[in-house]
Length: 165
Image 1 (cartoon, rainbow, N blue to C red):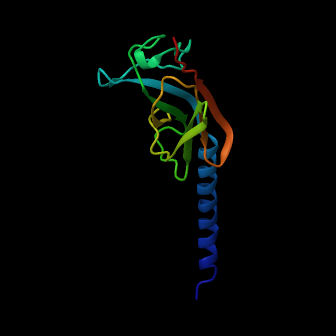
Image 2 (cartoon, rainbow, N blue to C red):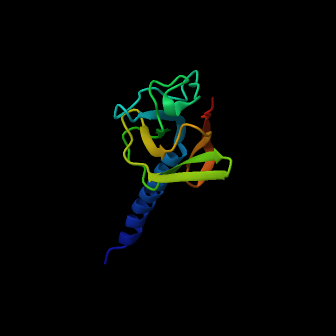
Image 3 (tube, rainbow, N blue to C red):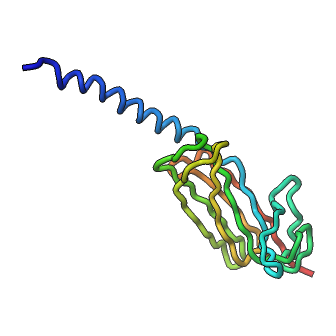
């Protein structure tokens, strides 16, 4: 009968499990929401504009539905993208990001939310979470992105759409 067989295995397995758990938590701790972008949909042209409405400086969003202000086209829909940075070229299991858009209307606020599992990050560690918004162009929209379960690194922006004469 061999002595210490199972004990030797447990001495080997326990550190491997511990290192795996530490690696997971280190990966999760290195996740950051680094940017929120907003690209108008040019319906008459059937394309997304390359213009980032939240760029530097942010676009003037007056009468966007008819293409006034700083827009490259008339637009009544917007693609929102939260840029997430994590561990390069890695699947970040269990890591989810929420992206919300709150329309500030006279009748009260209305919020649209998406929640997505982070897939495999790119070579630079980036992953993009998208939310499609219809009916943009005349009311302000508050944007917010955060990691589910950890709102400390949340990022917020505002699309200051307005319409009038």
